[in-house]
Amino acid sequence: MSTTLESPPHSAEKKVEQTEAGNYFVSNYPPFSFWKPDQVPVIENVLAKPAPANTPLGVYFHIPFCRKRCHFCYFKVYTDKNASEIKAYIDAGMREMERFAQQPYINGRKAHFVYFGGGTPSYLSIPQLTDLTNRMKDLVSWDGAAEVAFEAEPGTLNEKKLTGIREVGVTRLSLGVENFDDHILETNGRAHRSGEIEKAYRFARTLGFEHINIDLIAGMMNETWENWKDTVAKGIALGPDAVTIYQMEVPYNTTMYKQMKEEGKVTAPVADWQTKRDWVSYAFDEFVKNGYTVTSAYTVVKDPQRIKFVYRDALWEGADLLSCGVASFGHLGGVHYQNQAEVGPYMQAVDAGQLPIFRAYETTHEERFVREFILKLKLGHSEFAYYQNKFGQDPLAFFAPQLNYLQNEGFAKLTDKDITLTRDGLLQVDRLLHEFFLPQHRQYARYT
Image (cartoon, rainbow, N blue to C red; front, top):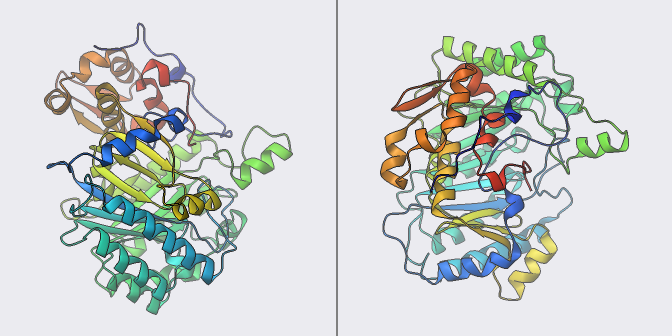
């Protein structure tokens, strides 16, 4: 049964100007606030079922170690762990993965994609990384994986480290560049400096990575139009296969948010929303002039026929994700789950022979439809027949008020077959997507 709005959405009509604490970014659905400890047994029920025949499996491992914490970072990271503590953590992660791999739902399946996130995966030494990946491959085979993605901080990379990363099978290297100005990097808490970026990138190019991506952030503290134009120009000069551009937000539990709270400030010391959108739009235009294609609200790609974001696209279409490590998020058989968010309870659960899952959420058929529609709308275009065939739902009817609102406000072009976001709609898609949430979920816009 459809649960469309009774009247056109109103909350999206109010244009956000200043950046305040919190976020609009939609990374999953239903929102994490609805995931509960009492649903953890549902994951255990899924794991006891036979493996599905046609659902791709991804593997994610969270490496929560960094040289320092960025002021805007909300992820679970540690900056004070020594080699023995890192080894203990890897051992715990592999015991966790082993328990998953023994379950009927996972046993014998091969990974369609693998993702190392953090934190800073490139913080690991080559012996640590080799040990980790060898043990992972023994538990869930990577043979034939369409993508093995790896996040890296430029300052942790040298020729030996990059060679080791390539040799363990990484195909997609994502460099957390963010900006090319040393003052901006420093004041935002980044550990690396500009000289390390090009050095790491140039050597990585010699190693045969199939896909090198760089991340940029529009609207960091102290950023100006002049600096942003320089950052875009230097990004173009590098010539990466893809560029991911985020608009700066200040999620709760970040260093920046805590400072705002102490000083009694509501507005964050970063660019306002319209400025950030203008900067991203400028970057899109400049990259397009240099042969790139805009492929989502955040990405430009040099060769869209060759370069894919397998991890993203598979997850958005409902792939299973076996996720291990502290605070990591996974998805199995239509059930979302998250592990214990602190390393102590996480390792205690593993040591006790338990899966260290903290909370879970069993999605309904309708929620899976809504999730896929809103996440894939970030790509800028959706054809309604796809959802009719897969879910038996017609988005044009189900989301009639929301879709008409987007068209009436100039955020999208709508036909009876599809929707295409305009540039203005694409640049603020996350703000607009909250109106597509089911009514019971619409008031929650938190990462955690």
